Every structure is written in C-alpha cells, then in structure tokens.
Image (cartoon, rainbow, N blue to C red; front, side, top):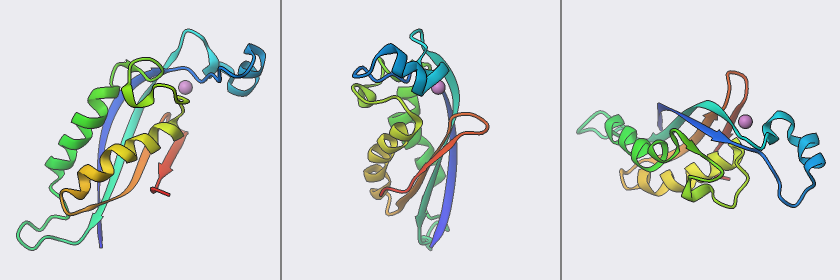
Length: 137
Ligand code: NI
C-alpha cells in the first residue's frame, strides 16, 4: 500500500455559535470564535489517498485527478465563502474544523473510489498550530 498526498488552500469565514445556548454561554465556550460578525482562517486541506501502484502509470492515483476533485467539489465551494451561510453542505451544522473535515470526507470518499484508490485521511489545518485529522471512523 502506498500513500500519496495533495494540499490545497482556501480561505473561509465562520462563527462558532450554538443557537441553543445563551450569548454568555457561547462567549464562555467559544471565546473570540463566537464573534457575531464572523472571522476568517487560511486553511490547508491535505488529503491522503492510499492504494496499490498501477503498473501502467506507476501511480496510486493521478495527482491531477485528485487536485481536480479537491478543487471542484471542495475548495471552490469553500474559498472566500462564509461556512455558516454560504456552503450548502455546512448549512445547519457547527462550523468547526472537525465538522468540516468529516463533511469533506463524505464528499471525496466516493469520488476517489471511482479512481480505484481509497481515501485514507482528511487533514485540515485551521491555523499554524491547530489541526484536525479524520480517517473515516
Ligand atoms: Ni475560527
């Protein structure tokens, strides 16, 4: 099994806010991220795909195809958008990096399978210091 990785970058705004809680409780739990006027992050999305090497190409999966899938189905929908209000697959969900990583997995996993490879990990870097990884379970 060989693992390949591709990084794409995007910038999005969000607010962490639970509508079932008071303003005070939201401020207490989410701090600056509860700001009602939103704030932004420059995200790194690193997708890891695993599979065996195709003897005809020498590739696990053509990285041009992986780049295209990540761009069309994920980053084009997220870049310069508001995760709380502009992104169809995030409507009604908490706009956390964890939730976003799981939703990205749900989108990419079937698309990558069509290329005879397997999605292994969705890694989202929200800041230089805060990362989330999701392995599908
Ligand atoms: Ni934030």
